[in-house]
Amino acid sequence: MTNTRLLKSYIVKNGLTQKELAKIVGISFACLNAKINNKKDFKSKEIYKICEILKIEDIDNVFFA
Image (tube, rainbow, N blue to C red; front, side, top):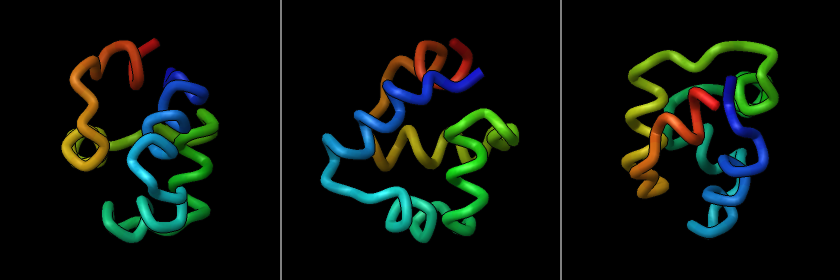
């Protein structure tokens, strides 16, 4: 389960909006929002791309809380 608060804080820390992050990752805003809010699961390639973009080192704490 995604740690929603922590992921959102990484997005803000990196000066992005969810809409901008979705575009960079290559998914729709609605899809990203559903995944951040644990209504859908992230694909592994999306997780790795997001970690690269947001400089997340602790993948487990953010995506597998």
